[in-house]
Image 1: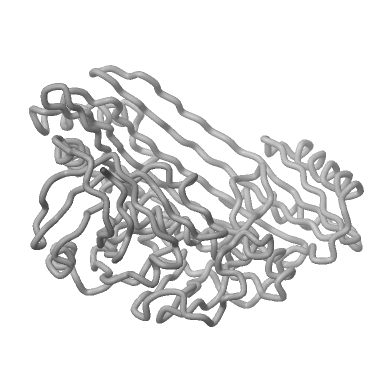
Image 2 (image 1 turned 30 degrees about the horizontal axis):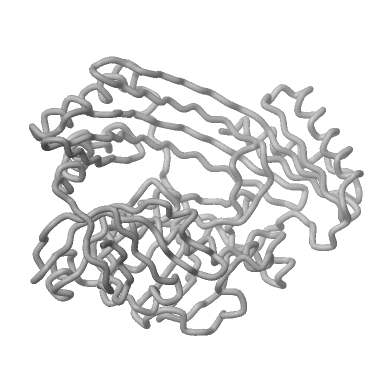
Length: 447
């Protein structure tokens, strides 16, 4: 890690009078194993290292990157970024981040255990996961895929404006996709387990999840159309929250791509809903001590008591909006510059368990999976219409499974129609955590 900081600091120190220089240096290693029918279908181990450099001079920005940390290559990359700046468009809002006095929270996101976990044991884990899924229920006909995946990444960023920061993290996961059948009918289900070290990952949990989701929908039919209260499982809520977070992105607001533009200070949800993006939570999958510009990550409250508090910004979007950065700069890696994005969105948990929520609602629809989420949700109008599968429930008890129907509403109305928030916060491998969420008066289109 120290060598990455040294490289970034050295490059930032090469800034000439009248220009700002930022260096983002990263190194990573990842493994992915896919098994099928008791054998390894694919195995990949990838390592990468590189630098991305931004130069801002005369209100023009140039960017260049290289997949090497060789000193000569790094120097050539800086020269290329300078050259690119000469051809860029003038933009008065350009400028690198500067220290804002917020200190990074110390987070322990790195596990040495991963480096000591050999590839053959990763293969064994994927094979064992496949075996557990097959043995989980006699109705499991096939395990379409079973995976092991992991990554270890380190990065450092330094600027001529005085920022120096670094971060590192490890992640591991297993996932399985099962096919269950009875007669001529088949249903599918996916299960997974995530953690920062191999010892955090539960093969049994991932297998049981895949088996349960594949088998409980056997016998599903189209439901009758009508308006129902839907109870979203945590992974569905997480998907919805990730989309919602995209509409609270300051860059999207500036581009007119958000349904919440000009609504700060207004009630946009039920009073009991609190929505935060908190990368300082060490349990969050997207936790981070610094953002992609080197500023400290921080807890940003987006909705409090149902009232919209504000949006997420990086330095550039904040300057355009007349705001400060919220420490929300993100980037895909050293090959790209910083954008704006949420890392750890979550709704503050309520007090009721999923069973208590269904008992209170009485009758409705438990949504297990959705499809077409990206094409079925319009972030500008808020229109929401997606395919879904799940279980009807009556008297608070699960009844018959249903499939091949759509649920529809708008994001605005769904936030105002929340009737219960679960206490079952679940950390998921995404920018959002999930929990059980009950929403009234949703249109269900079946037969």
